[in-house]
Image (cartoon, rainbow, N blue to C red; front, side, top):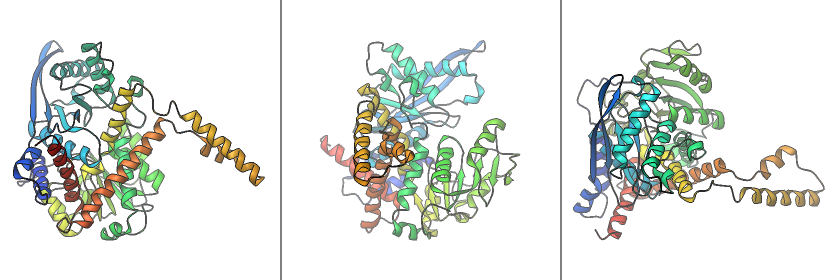
Length: 474
């Protein structure tokens, strides 16, 4: 999904810096500390060769470490042809602020490999990934206590399993080797709920937004999520899960989906599960038989809707299309989907934006849970689940005796079930997203100079990071 911007627009790196400066201006800290927080501590560039298809192919990879005020540092690794130093530095900075906002005890990092995964067979990708892992791990840029990658655009459970196995081979006596990366398959030390985590976090963020009537009114909306008309850009892992949960559990209506080869629009609502299966089978949305297919899918970004969820790439909403955006509420499921210029235009239009550093923090939050699980060497819920069930069963039996009535088998099954790992992960994520929203909202509503949620999110994060640096003696 390439964007053809015909005029000079702020880059992702420039947008992050602009938004940093906007929030930092309200902080009572020295210019020197502001600069220390802003700059990226280090960037490692690696160029390595792999013999494939009878020849040696050279690949370029990066790992940026933005802030080590807390360690390990945390951040995904993406596989894309767009990967460059500016991008990984901006994403690493965003990870620092994101972790601080949701109170996850990591510094920010990010990595990438300039590659199109679709150009290579699975066995070739494995060899490339293992070599990239070797180059990073031998410099401790993959390490359970120093730098912990995760999936990002173009990578997933499969790549994380390869990385974890390669690290283990290099460090066979490290008992905590599984904690070197997160986002692994459950069979390889992963955690239940990690695949859905970012999309689930978007859902929880919207649920929390709609608990605050004042915020809903400011967005020129009313009521709850049920019946709200939503357009989603990008039906990858994040967009798919967000749309699926909002549709199936909250009663929202997904009226538009934008994909690489076009879009689908249906005012009556799109069945997300059916569309996802169609995309998986055909490779795109063209020819989908429900609703109207739109050849230039990006036009749906400016279609009338209640909520717009950009869940694809950076800079999809820019000053060229921002004036035409009709959504009342935008929640940034992707990193940097709104440029700094577009952000200004949208705020002047009165559009409420739930910023990326909060909205898509579900991934790093559940990654944190996975990291803790790997270090503790025990599945969440394993020790207490059956005890919970016994206590609930005793309570139900006592109540039945007192009331002289029996509860239905369905109620007994639902109430009496002990919390398993997926239940605890979702509970922890929900609590994290609620708490972070309330913190962000406090500065949005209580600090006179802060007029939008993005500035409030940066402000909350930078206060936390500044406090950490001061504690270290800076």
